[in-house]
Image 1 (cartoon, rainbow, N blue to C red):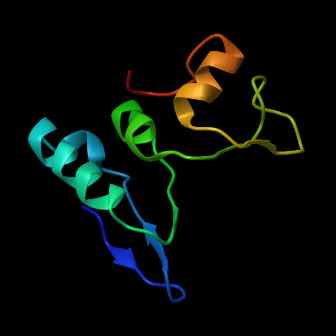
Image 2: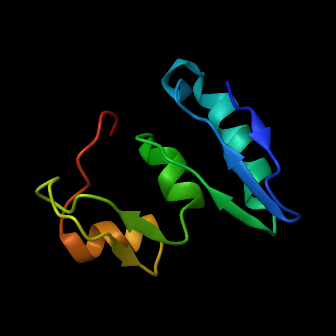
Length: 94
């Protein structure tokens, strides 16, 4: 479900490809546990609950069209990112 590997001291990279198979209580527990982590986390997820709970910066690849070559960096949370765009990012889960 979530192999977490330390790539460097104080950093974590998680694989959340199957987070849609996890029940809500487990997702909440995972988000709460990761909120306490003080290092750097890099994650890719379509799970909006996860993004809202943990995202402190957003790196958008492809832009709204999905074809932009230059990444866009939003320094705020995922919630702030949505407010700036005026809508949720394209994805699988709401």
